[in-house]
Amino acid sequence: MLYVPTEKRALLDFALKTIEQCRVSQGNRAAYCRQMNQIAETGRYDNTKALINMLNVLLTKYAAHLYSPVELKFNVDFENLYPKIEMQRAAVVANILTRQWERGGTANLFGRGVYESLKYGWTGMKQWPQIEGEGEHERITYHNKLVMPWQFGVYNEAENDINRQPALCETTLMTMPEIWRRICMQPDAKKLYERIEAQSQTGASMSEMTSYFHQIVSSNQLNTSGTPNTQPGGVVDLGDVLELQAACLQVVAAPSIRTYIVSLLQAIRARPDVLLPASMRSGVYLQRAAQAWALFEGRDFVLPDDVKLLAAPVMAHRLSMRGRAKAEEMIQELVTSLPLPPLRQH
Image (cartoon, rainbow, N blue to C red; front, top):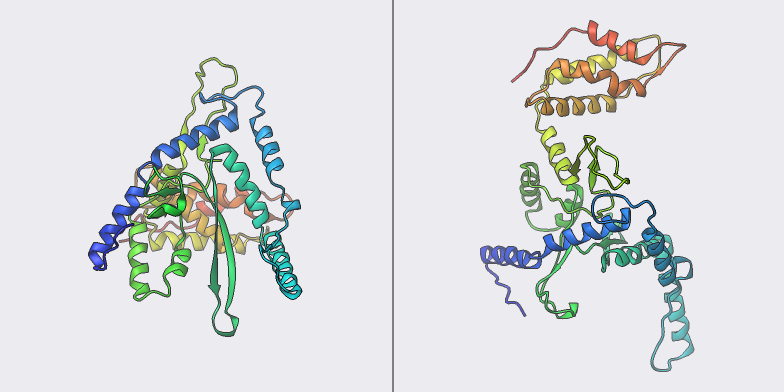
């Protein structure tokens, strides 16, 4: 049993210490799960790929033997004898639960949880109701998700009975709209939301993902020969990729740069050889690409040359041209003729 303080500052300190205690072995569990996933996907544990890997096939077969969404059916039973009308109501409730699991995708999600449990040793399924809409449109919806072992922690790891745990902790990634839905009914929700948003924009990121299925980006093929690989290549953790994405958004795209991109889109629309022009969304992607290019060039601001360099690769495939006109050549012609904006606008 834990004593929960009531004073605001003491409560905050208590919550942080409790979370830290629940996450004390998270790193070890994450490393273990990475190892298990690597063995399941490649058939080996040394970053090479087995010529024949039957582990995924066996995991799928065992999961199907343990659970099948097709055969799922709920049943409500009683220890004592009740009137017939009560038994009929129980049967209706069981049918409703069965249909909700089928229509809401819960049955398939549970099946995936069985597969992941065989791979990692444990997976939990979390379900919760949520009120959506307002007034006469208000309704209760039911949501579910899988909680992976590296996302879940307990206060006392020596206790196996989860009902005896004084505290549980789940670590997950949330979007800002999801955060707002969680806190919108609290007092000073707007101020709390702004504080969370400011913290998330300062680079506070979390590398815990919902799956280790695609947790690395490799620039080299898996080695199946058993001999050392001398070809260049590397592995990038997706947590680093997320940090780079956040850093790209901090690169300054001055108003003059955005105006230059809009002028380019308007010039494309005015061309008679363009059947289907690029949308404004492609201009947003062009700006994002220019910000990323500037970051890799070691700059914190976008140059007009960045936009000129990336215009064709980003937008050419989005255009539909008349006859034999080529989008790449047309875009290069436009970026050459359009007047350039100032280098940087403060």
